[in-house]
Image 1 (cartoon, rainbow, N blue to C red):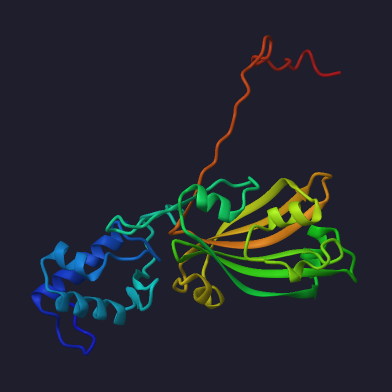
Image 2: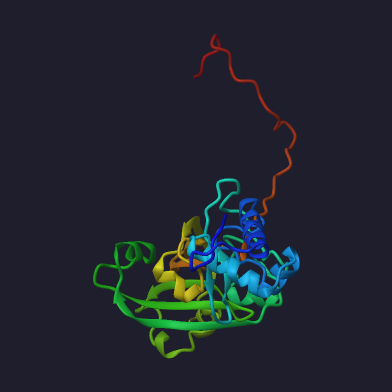
Length: 283
């Protein structure tokens, strides 16, 4: 039997809400890091008063099952890892009001561009900028010498007012003089093209899933342990030279990846061929 935050047993209504919320988490309807329906919706789902819902959520938070956050991007979030659902499945809010952003890997389309195409309101929060001596990874990616300096730009992208992604990107300071004096809240691809005459023509991305730690929670409004898409990205210009190197983190509860491929139709005589027999050998 569940007890409230003060240790007293929950009543029947609050207990019903607590069990119902745990069932939603266990069956994958709300996944780790995903947001629970609003209190009003939980009240409707389980036939309980708002006060009973609050008591149930307070108890589940005390037990470490959920976390409640205040503010515009707040709500109640599931914390329990569940082995019955894959970490890479993308979740929507259980009440159906969340909008998921579609992203196509390996395509050089700026975040603002694909957000506007999907009719999201776009905003950028500039976190920090500066000059630094790049570490070995940055120097290797951009082809810089040990004494070369890199421009570092840290930004957060928001879709419909809610944080979607965090990025820290690097470009050669020598190649882009004065870039720190430019507006860095818009598309850098457009800035490279319009001001410096450089166009990104090829992109290489490495994508994996990682869990948010304390350094990400404030920027992305997520809980510790929430799944994120970590993307290491290098773009190359029209001459094949490295243009930009970045580490991006996308909220997995707000992002889905769309991948397409084309298979070339087999031509005449391109069907499978038998391997030579041992007696025939190879030349």
